[in-house]
Image 1 (cartoon, rainbow, N blue to C red):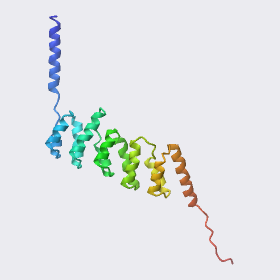
Image 2 (cartoon, helix red, strand yellow; image 1 turned 180 degrees about the vertical axis):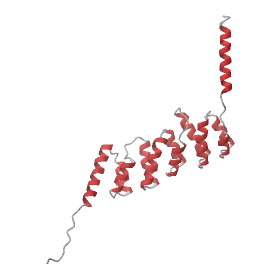
Image 3 (tube, one colour; image 1 turned 60 degrees about the vertical axis):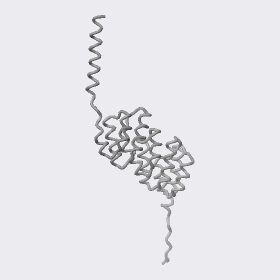
Image 4 (spheres, one colour; image 1 turned 90 degrees about the vertical axis):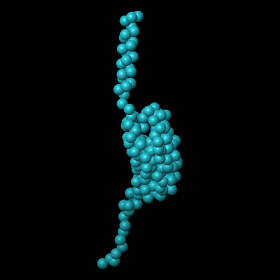
Length: 202
């Protein structure tokens, strides 16, 4: 017993020393970004890391609300990982998504997965409501055309309304490819028609 106690005491001292050496998280940049003190106290309850402070500061500097930052941090914790989606969140915001919609995507842990598609669909030229309808299908796990497939359909002359109707049919990837290939074949054929030019015979 006498030999056991000193070993236990040494182990306890080592643990205590390790706790003292743990660096404190620096909240200065987040404070300077304009976050309210009450919100900052809320953030501290999540035991955030320095990389997370960087992510949250980036969001605040881009104009995100305190409520959005805290909701995204909570969503990350609910999925047992750190918050790393500042860039994806900003991409979704630029694509026309509201804070509530972004939080919905974060709660499904899909921000980094869906943000790229949202931006691409905007670059194709689709309106915000259509982009949101398509992305909500993805969020629900419903069969949905990819942005690349949608772009190909648009190049065949389909209107936005027609494209959305095709999306809502819930085609599998193979069915979608077959449909798009048919549209492209019709387009290519119509562009290669032979035109006979009549002229006066000599």
